[in-house]
Length: 165
Image (cartoon, rainbow, N blue to C red; front, side, top):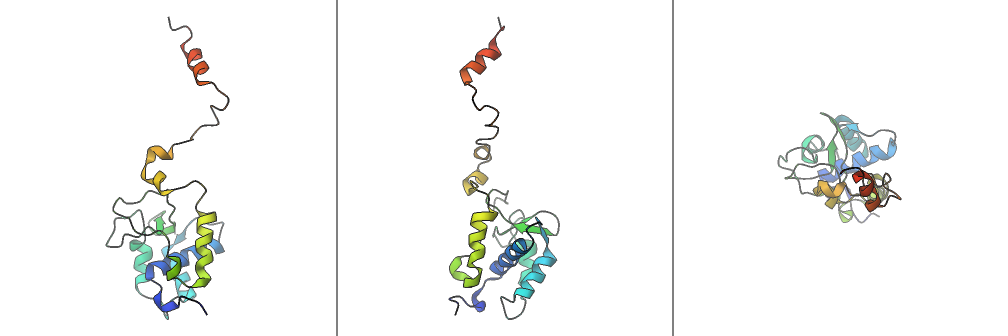
C-alpha cells in the first residue's frame, strides 16, 4: 500500500511526473510536445480521469520561462512554442516565477519517488545550483580554466608587456 494515493496528486505534480516519465522512456529526446505530455498523463492515470487543468499547466502554469498567469511553478521549460522539457535550476526563468521545481516527495505516490532521485542525480548536471542561475556572473566561474592551466599569471602579464617602452 502506498503512503500517498492518487486523489491527492496536484495537477502540477501530475504534469511533472508525466514529463519526467517521457524523459526516462525516451532519453534520446530533449523535449516533448505539450500534447505528448498530456497524453502521457492520461495514460498514467494519476487521477481517476484526465483533469482539464493538465493541458493548461503543461502549456502555461508550470512553464518557468513564461510570465506567471497565475501559476508560479518552475517545473517545465519551454524550448519552443509547444515543446517542453523539465526545468533545470540553471535555466532562465521569468523573474516572477519563484514556485517549486519538483513535486514534494510526501505529496506523490511512492512509485514516483525514484523520478525525484533520477532528476537530482542524473537530469540536473553536477554543480548546477539555483544560486548560479540567479547570478549570471557566478555562472561564468571556471569557464576556460583549461586554457590557463599551468600558466603563471605574473609571467603571462610580463610577456604581454614586453616591448611596451
